[in-house]
Length: 341
Image (cartoon, rainbow, N blue to C red; front, side, top):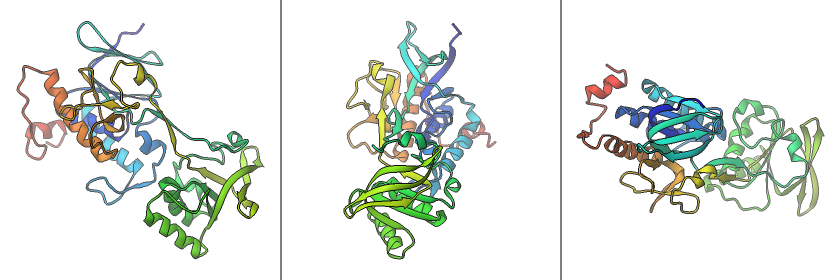
């Protein structure tokens, strides 16, 4: 068995909140190793909507999920965090010396003083719609996310769903599609009113189609769609389709986190909002994985939680040391860490 990697903090989850935790911990001279089940950093931003605009990141009127991740990676570069991707944490066990032994499904082992869980809602996967034979088309002409908009250029696109994701991608992909059709089971939508109004305006102008009904069958060869069949109130209708995007939401699975002995509340980790520590001393939970009164599942809220958790972690790691809070704008020592001076 390989010797465990020793570090100050293991961060579970390489989404935006986990990445920003590297920055905040780095300011306190706490070294990090980051583990993620995905094969790249960025979490849901990178996996599900890398080109989708985000409008509520402070200082950016709009920024794509991928650009946000790139900016965070540039910001944390001075701290030299090491990433362990395509790995799932299978165990977290406290040792006799008070540290934690963290193990992954590929046999990587860590000894650390603290664990930061920034795993979002756990592992996630899109919900597959109940359409016969859809598996044969997945990853070739049926997709559950948009990683590169240009891959959809010039295609007959059908989007299925009535929430924000379906409406957002309808508006984003309509200008580059040969023809775009939105299908929803009813003529009422869960997405924002502004997006609904913009979609209806495009339909009124003849720039796209809206069908109220349900996809009942797919047609095509060797994984490539050429048309779909839709059941509407008027009967069955066939629609040309070379790219199908069903947005039926995500199935969230907490996975092994549920077996680590933490107190849980409906598959979320309750935390103390002064430290964002869980029921287990030394294990912190930040981002969508945690819960507390007034919790808002926003990236900017996760950034705030990462800052407070890092401050608490520094005090816990050095209980006999006076922890002096400093500002990056005025502290020469912090600016040296960031490579500015």
